Length: 280
Image (tube, rainbow, N blue to C red; front, top):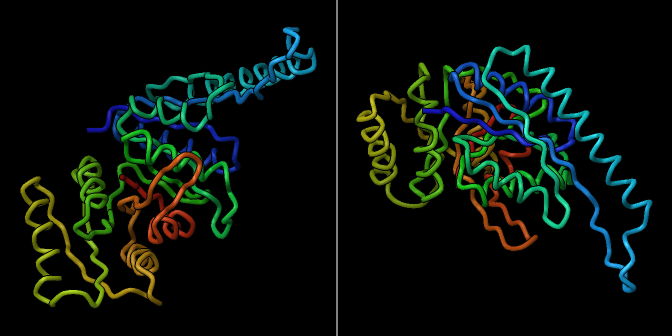
């Protein structure tokens, strides 16, 4: 069951859509929503003579704190009207990366929500960093919400991107609360040239049996890649079938500040018209 949702405000234009989606989810699942307003303070350099920091730096810190308090107040005013259980957290990042702080907050939730990078924009550095930190550091599934996505909570039709990997298995398990609340679920396996046809069919059969034991009847679908793209095949099936949510494993590695995403994860993150629930 989903009882705790978390959303960090990143300062990006997509925050409003992500907030609206998180509110919808909280309402649909009767869950609590925690929203984080982050005050990102520039680090003050140590003075070699032991003098206090420059007054201009201290003034900037106070200005940023005041802006954070005002943003938090606006969030509280907005959430008070939504009829859900909520809280607004105000935290500061001085000597620590704000995305790491957000990932720490997310560990105390069932699902973390975040704004997805704008479609076609490969340079949304801050949104990428929030997404990567939540995916690789929180241990929680991450719902990436495109700016113009129409969110239904709970979703009535879900598309599961399936291949028998650790990441896809994790995503499938994390999506169980969504699937049990849905009317229909498609498990989509984008086929390649590898293996025999019987082996590819077995992949879908096994996962269908597993989900049936959870009381979830699924439609197992095999699709060829479109233009050699697994993500495009998934997105076309999701659009044609009227899905409201895509579930996928989040592939990649996190190492210091070097983020490497798998091709399918990166393409879904950048091109999906629907919210995508990623897990790693």
